[in-house]
Length: 111
Image (cartoon, rainbow, N blue to C red; front, side):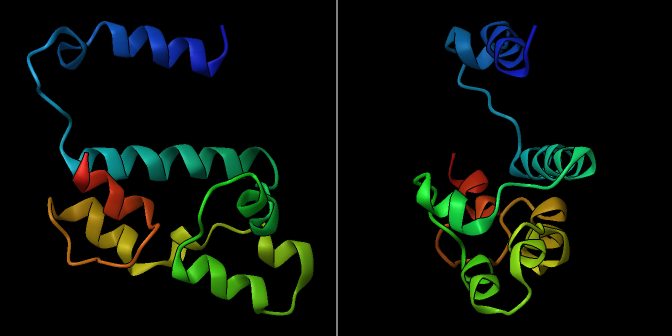
């Protein structure tokens, strides 16, 4: 069973899918996202930022900055969220004071 199938089955069995409207807190979503991305990075290099952007995902302000920093593929394949203060704030506060566009941690509090 691949990850997509596993999470689809898991989501189908949650209360949110059965109409109760309960959702995970943004702090939990942020911690889960950080853990998943760290696991992906540990298993090999992440997709480069230009390739991520070309695939249709908008980049946050720090990801855009990394694209112009010299360093080649190594720099553009790193995960800037690991050193971003937005991650720390989002993992500890339900409504962190983060407002820039396309930050996944900002998106978690909107869902």
